[in-house]
Amino acid sequence: MSPCGTDRSFRNATAVGSCRLRDAPAGSLRRLFYHRFPLFRMDDTVERDISGHTLRIDRTLCIGSGNCTNLADDVLVIRQDNIVDFQDETPDIDAGRLEEAASVCPVDALILEDENGDQIVP
Image 1 (cartoon, one colour):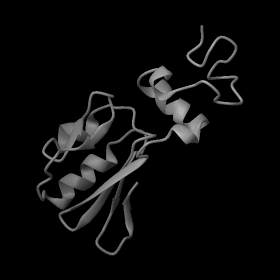
Image 2: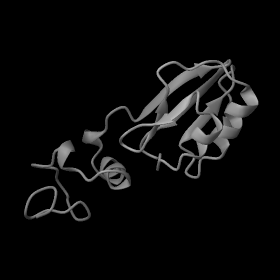
Image 3: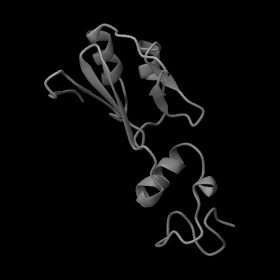
Image 4: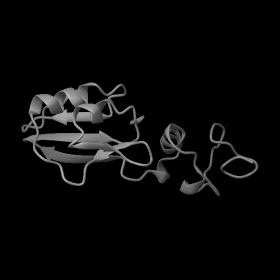
């Protein structure tokens, strides 16, 4: 039985019908599902102002590699759904460290803008 019922699969589905968010597979397959069925999207992007810069996380692209959290663990954390999110409280950190954390994302899910709104990374 497919997650969307007996006669539909994520790959070949053309209508969502009885599909529900809780029926979607975990991790990156769920993100693929969100791309396919935009009605299910929840909080696609989140952003915070940190050290005069704006850091945005595109949650539909994140694959949870953890490269960014290794460099900026006081700002970023991997949640239970294996997607990067902001810590509850984000202190100001060195702008260079923030830029490096955003630049190591393998899927460019982290977007960093300066105080003028110009995109720095990616």
